[in-house]
Length: 554
Image (cartoon, rainbow, N blue to C red):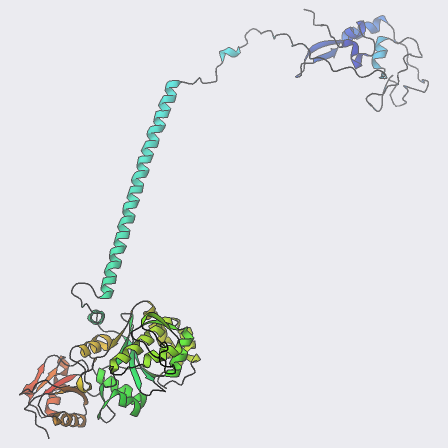
């Protein structure tokens, strides 16, 4: 088969010069096609050799006329272009040595005087490739897996089954997590409820009273200071005990009536109001300790001008008022200074007026309740930070008792303020009966539950406190017994007079280690040893004595 094929672009090929036709066909042949479908040519060497044999070559001259087409560095090759620039030619169309042969014209650069030919049309597709013997066909290989509807159904079913199983397992895990979380929450709720009931003293078998619940838990630590409010205008004093129970984390204000019977330094009976005026802070503090069995750590004297400043420093107070308080400077018919109602906002002046107000015909207890409400309102507004509370105390610029420094009072009030803000604070009145003695039941309960639980044992070398109640029917028996006990080194506590006379005297002790002391008290009073027995004593006494008709005065 002849490999030479017709070339439609042979006459315009730039490598064949301008001689298209026979010579061009002899020099090139189509050997294939490139990736764009264009023909690829190859020069026929054999045809060139035949032409060279038939037509002798013109010998090259060592010197050629200079001009177009001459290059001294071309190495003797005609038509050599040292720059290889496209579109540049030195061919004049003739040769100085005669007619140009096809071989010569193939190497002579042509000057492109004509416009560039148009882009060639797409070449015809190459002839189909002839298969060689032993060659594999493409149809013999199959690398693409055809889809199988049954296999897809199986895969979908497996995925569905797996996802459903995972969902079930996940649901089970979430269910278990919810159950565990619910159990934990219930346990915390139960524990919190039990803790609250225990703290509030509402568990079965415990006293319903806060103090009783606390007392049942064992020894407690209490901090107590005595507060005296001095009315610089109206005269008189109001006394209260501020108590911080560190064990139960509760606070209290115990209001003490001025009629409370106490003893002075030499054991002479007196009242609390007189003791404040006559014996001063130290003597009154000792008298209170003796009567109530407490251990007061310091005295805070607060005159009414300082109370007014204190209320202003904390930013006024909000309390429930139980009466209208008139303005002393107001005219008749004008509005009261303090109105009766719930959550009334009181300034410093209004707070002082309400704390010291006592209407005509009212008992002292009514005025003390108002004083206690003002102090609790102040504590609710005072800072719970010890440093800030100390700064407030120092800002009052008051002269404190030597037993109580600024920082100690500030730290103490900060603790009470924290109790008052949390609702763990109460104000109570110490009930006092006729003669200034503790009222039966109520008085002893306050002393026992709020101020100290069980009466503390006296320190070593401390005097034994002896409470005496006169049931002889003779008024002078109490004073006679007081003299005997004081001379014997005991602390006398007046227990008042009995409602009815009793034929036999009785000496009672509560603790077994007090039996010997009770026996000595009986001897001091001239009573038989058979009168001593174990039983209940007064809350503020180590040994209680009931004088009967068998007691002989001296």
